[in-house]
Amino acid sequence: MALLKIEDHAGLSLFPSLSGARRWAVTFIATIVSTYALDAIATATGILLVTLHILQGLDHVDLILFLACTYVLWGLGLRVNLKANWMLLEETGTSTNVLSKAACDLVKARTRSVGARKIAAAVGYVGTELAKEAPYYVGAFGVVLLTDSVSANEAIIFLGGANLGAAAYEYGLARVVRVVLHRRDGPAYASFDTDWVPRDYLRDYYSVIEPDEHRTIEFFVDAIKEAEPNESMLYFGVGPTLHHVFLAARTASEIHLGDYLPANLQEIERWMNRDPEAHDWRPFVRYTLECEGLASPRDDEITQREELARARITRLLEVDIRRVDPLGEQNTPQYGTVISAYCVDSATEDRDTWETYMERIAGLVRPGGTLLTAALRRSRGYLVGDKKFPSANVDEHDMREVLERYFRREDLTIEVCELAEVESKGYSSIVLARAHHRGSRSPQMARTGVINSALTR
Image 1 (spheres, rainbow, N blue to C red):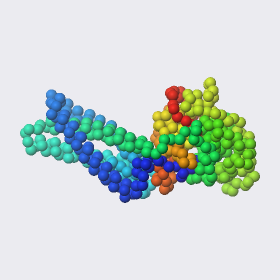
Image 2 (image 1 turned 180 degrees about the vertical axis):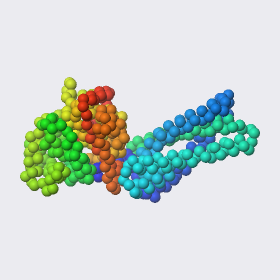
Image 3 (image 1 turned 30 degrees about the vertical axis):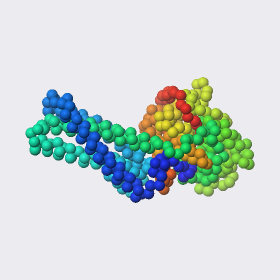
Image 4 (image 1 turned 30 degrees about the horizontal axis):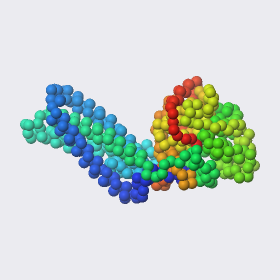
């Protein structure tokens, strides 16, 4: 696939043409508004708790414990808001906290590490929130020192109430940010069943080898070395494409290609039958051979790999990830190697649904087997022609969380590949993953449920 052609209309429609200066302006305004809102809510909650007198009977030690508990609640609320703020930074370049954005941008100018940026954004945000605590303590205990009408215990109750208000504010702000990010001002997603045109997809995404596919193929070529040789391999959600198949031809005893749409499988059949109008995959074969160590693959070597792939492809399967049994067979077989690239994340716009689908894919891997997968990172949609199809807006943390239910942490390799100068299109990177079963650990049963979504890729 060609990420350079993907546009996140859902995200960009909220900030259609924000330059760097405008993003800063939006961030400054959001910071001022959120600061006043937090102060107002926290102060009002603190005063209300004092005036209600519901904690007046507690002694000083109990009130200190109460205050400590409110900090825990505030911390939990802050944790939720940190995640929402990170999503806002990643998808729009803006924040509700100017120091958070400044720290993130500063680190970004020095490194392309996603983890470093995320930590910097969190430190900036938390640092600001902690600094806001000082005026509350100065105000509360200043009043205690200056007047006899307010006791030290009442000051503690006020501070605890302010923390409860701050916790509620953090949760509320996180919710608002998520709602804003999920707004979709553009047209509804196109339907795979009625709007998908395989030839348009091949033209838009596979006329050349784009940077994301350079890295994906390189990653898969290296990862396939751990796959068990001479076993059947399954490509799930292959779409009308073959660019990832050539790297498995030397390893697999046979290759099964599965997709939801018959039209996609028909495109593959055209190539299998040597139809002159079939898509030309030779540039991808050449690059695969280069990744395997051939400096300058000859034409006959490219042809030989094509013929080997044709010989290895023995089944074309109509599959449906919406089913508990995705292959549509009672007692779905498990494979030694399953490859599913840019499929599950592109089958739905909903993260929870993506999680269910990923569990079903993982369930197709036998104990001792290998799963190779890839996803768009933090993308909400991609275009084929003038039609927008969904993407689940997942990242490396989501990928790790779901795969660790089936594979040991030490047997997972998850890589984020950043793509320079594509943020204006609503994404900045891809996630590549390899997972390998050691020994006979059995996969968990995938969750069930009725999912109203479609599959291809």
